[in-house]
Length: 189
Image (cartoon, rainbow, N blue to C red; front, side, top):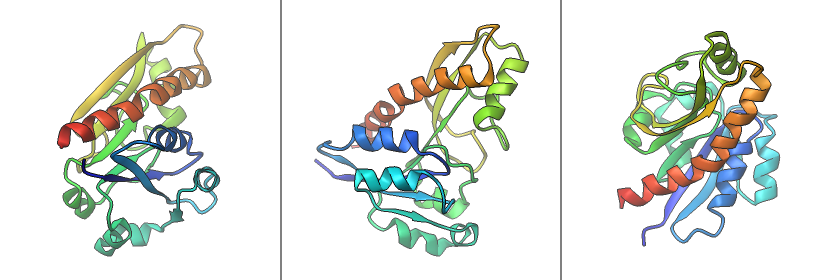
């Protein structure tokens, strides 16, 4: 069975990164090889250390250069877990159909530049949506417009706040994101 090495890109606390790493800890063919972040002080570094996974910080200037691919030597799939920068075209081409993102809403609604974290939840509540949830999708050149792999819903109640809705959405992320990654990679052969 082919070994598939993952890199997780995260910009913040890294709860999804930790959940994914734990899910694949003893997996026979999928392995989290490293965690990368664009923030030197991101808490994901502490999580990575605790998990025994190497983590590094990179700059926007480095990320925009094709030489960034050197950092990804030996990596088969890129997983975006709360990573907020647009992925450069060279990286999308190098990892065509191998970059997976999670978005905290039911795309195509509430996606695009600036729609992340609590901004998404505020917009969902303001629009009086009955449902929200998660979308796991492949990454292409436009924010949140890649092929949808999976969606899961949760109910939005009239008394929900951005925090209570975020909690429901996080629960869906933890439950489904690692399994959808696993399923997608295994189907690729």
